[in-house]
Length: 236
Length: 292
Ligand SMILES: Nc1ncnc2c1ncn2[C@@H]1O[C@H](COP(=O)(O)OP(=O)(O)OP(=O)(O)O)[C@@H](O)[C@H]1O
Ligand SMILES: [Mg+2]
Image (cartoon, rainbow over the protein chains, first blue to last red):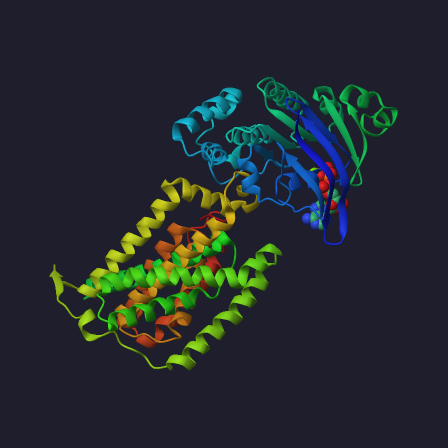
C-alpha cells in the first residue's frame, strides 16, 4: 500500500519552475531515496510535501487524502515529519528543549517523556548533552538531534533532507544505520541525498531528479547499476 | 531626598521597562520594528481615561485597557504586516509601512479628540499615601508598582517556564522550522502581538497615571524611550530591557531633580549613545544573536 503518492507536482519560485511534473510514490515501510545534483529541486520537493511551499499544480496524497497546500503544522499532525536541510536545530535552546519542541503536538506529558526516552536510547550521545545549547553540538550531534527531534513527533513517514551533508564518513555510517533501524521499527522514510552510493545502498526504491524532473526510477539495486547513474552520481 | 528620588525613578523606570518589554518581544519574536507600537500606548491611556470617566475603578480600567490595546495590536498587525510577512519583505519595508500608519493614526486621533492634555477624573488618583522610613508612596505609585511586577513577572514566567514560551522562543529563532514542529506559527504570532499590545496599553495607563496627563501624541515620545531601553538592554533581551528601563527612569528623575528637568531627554539619549559607543550589542549583550 502506498503511504504517499505524488502526482504531477509543479513548484515555482516566482516565474521559474524549480520542480516540473514530478511523480513518485512511497510504499508503507520502505525507504525511498531521491537523489540528484545541486539545484536539481530536491529540497523544493520536500518543502512542498511539508507545506512550507505551495505547489503550483499537482496532488500530494497522504493516506488517501490530498494534502497539497495544507499548512505545515497540519501536515505534522498527520504523521509526516521533516528533518530539514542543514539540521536547523534551535541553536539558542538546550538539547532537551529542542526535543520537547518536536513533541509540541503531544498534549500528554507522560507520553512525551516516553518518546524522549526512546529518542535518547537511539542517540545516547544526546543524553549527556541535554542541558547544553544545541548550537554547541558538533555537526554529527546536531544531525542526531534533528532526527531525534523529528522522532519526538512519533512520525509514520519521515522526510530527511541530506542528513549526511558535511559529516565525516564514520558519522554518516552511524546516521544511516539509525535510518535502517527506524525502518525496522516501522517508520517509512523518504531520503534525499547527494551521497548517492550510501543512499542507494540503504533504499528499496530510488528516484533520480534532474533539473526539476524525474529522470529515472526503479528498485535501488537496479538504479545503482544503471550506467548513466554510475557515471553521474557514483563516480564510476 | 535622594532615597525618595530613587524610588520615584525606579517606579517611572518600571513603567518604561514594561513598555519596552512588549516592544522587545514584538521585535525579538516577530522580527519587525513595528512603529505602531507607540499607538497602543496612547490607546491604552485613552481607553482607561474613558472607562474611569464612566465611573469604573482604575483597578478594573487598567486590565480592560490592556486587553483592548492587545486586541488593537492584533488587528493592526494583521492589516499591515500579514501581507509583508508572506512576501518575506525586508525590515526596512515594515519600518516604513508602520511609520506611515502610526503617523496617520496619531494625526487622526488628534483631529478627532484635539491635542489637549486630558486629566483622569480627580477621584481616581486621590486616596492616601503610604509613608515608611521617610519615603512617600502614593496609591497611584503602588498600583504602578504592583502592575509592573505582575506583568513583567508574568511575562518572564510565560517565556521561561511554560511550553508556550518555549514555542515562542523557537519561533523567534527559526519561524519556518517551528512550523515543522507542528506549531501554528500564525496563531502564535497573533498571541505575541496581543501580549505586546497589552503591555504597551498597560504602560500607557500607568504613565498617564504617573504624570496625570493623557494626549494623542504621548505614545510618540514614549517610543523614543522604548528605543533607548531596548537598544541599551540588548535587542530582544527581556532581562536587559527590564534593567535598562529601570536605569532610564532613575537617570531621568535624578537629572530632573538635581540638574534641570529640561535636560532629562538629553541625558536619556546621551546614555543611548554612550552605551552603544562602548558596547555595540547593548549593556548586557554578549553577542549579536537574538534572544527573547
Ligand atoms: N527561495 C528560492 N527562490 C528562488 N529560487 C530558488 C529558491 N530556492 C531554490 N531555488 C532554485 O530552485 C532550484 C532547486 O533548488 P533546490 O534547493 O530544491 O535544489 P536541491 O536539489 O535541494 O539542491 P542542493 O543539493 O544544493 O540542496 C535551484 O535552481 C534553486 O536556485
Ligand atoms: Mg537541497
